[in-house]
Image (cartoon, rainbow, N blue to C red; front, side, top):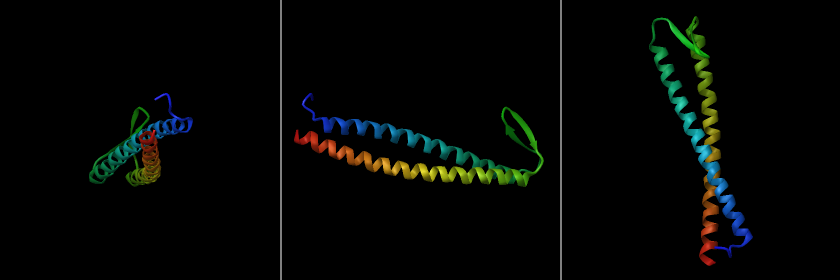
Length: 113
């Protein structure tokens, strides 16, 4: 193992960094998807509601005076989440490709060593 070339050592280091980045991006994406599902459910429940509606503002619940404005706010949040999820998805795909490529390169180099 001590006879590993500096180039291979560099590739292994890159591989580990890409692996960490991939885990981080995947976790962020999963969290955003969970937030989106929660906002979708919130919007569904809001559409069904007939009485007073309240919204969270910090640690307070405040009565929402305008249900339509609240729906618009939720729609804006959903749109932002969708954009972020798409960006994270693209980033995740790029990292997966780089991960696979580095893995193949390292495996070939280790096999020939």
